[in-house]
Image (cartoon, rainbow, N blue to C red):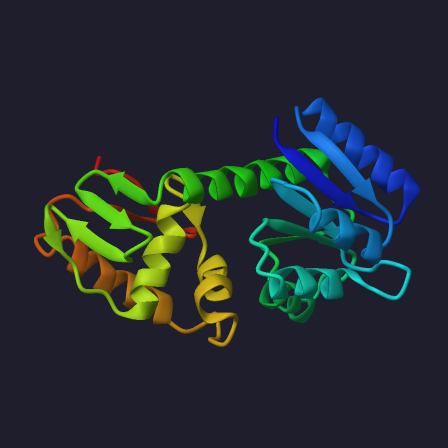
Length: 227
């Protein structure tokens, strides 16, 4: 059973999160201050951490997160926060967070996001390669092959492909790609995503006989095996 550390100072919220995760099948460790959470996170093996953004005791959530990443910890971290602006979300992700959930939230969404983080982490450890249709991506060597031929990708093209392949079958919005690949440095009204997706499609399948990146009108894109 995966073990999750929940760092949350509000007693009621902590009890509710712990109950929801245990009902979902997780083992749960808890901490109520940043220092306590950091000590717990660095002293045992965890599958993921749920980290409150604002914590008492002189060490807030971002300081805990920064200390973990400085210590080379790769444990997935889901940040919980009442701070909902784009700037705050970006700050959390740039500090090393893997996901960011704004309070108040539904527990069904919390467990779904946590499932995704745990699954992604386990996949990256157990299966460093992805094969979808004729596409083969090795995440260790960062090599891409399609129909047996190596495909040369620019850095951002590779990052888009890696982001999408880790979410095979899920619709990925332009906002999600901006956040993951450009860190919101590009305005959402530009067509830069569409241009990169178009180039990526042509490189992966020049003849357009078996498209692997599909457009979902009004929503974004989805990577899946050819229909």
